[in-house]
Length: 171
Image 1: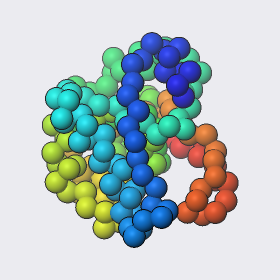
Image 2: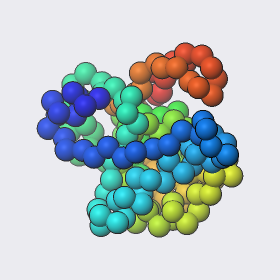
Image 3: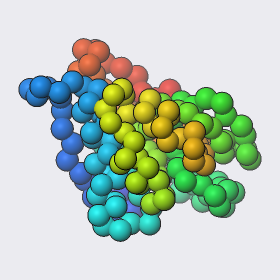
């Protein structure tokens, strides 16, 4: 991913996250805790927007051209934009952009600062971060996604499933 970001001329900051292994907290709690780290950082840095990406993201070919073409059609009222997820209750806004009220697999999202506090105040670690974002956040904001995806994830070993999992199926 670093090579892809550098090639696109995108500046970035890596934020440390923690694994549940060796702690008293379970994987669900750590998933939510790690999901909030970028929001805390962005709020403290007084960022207008933050793009949050997992470290195993893969950009589609011609990412810049595709993003440029689609972004000009993104509704101005966006609060949260997914670059590649599985989502439901979707309505096509224009070819390549859908509006939805829930999703899973937020490996690459762009979020406005108007949503930071809502996330920090409502995500508790009761269940997986994606589920909490669905129940407590996305239903109440303008959530859009690129479809087909512009960023996916490489397949990797899951310590939760204890097996290699495919992550390149988001659409």
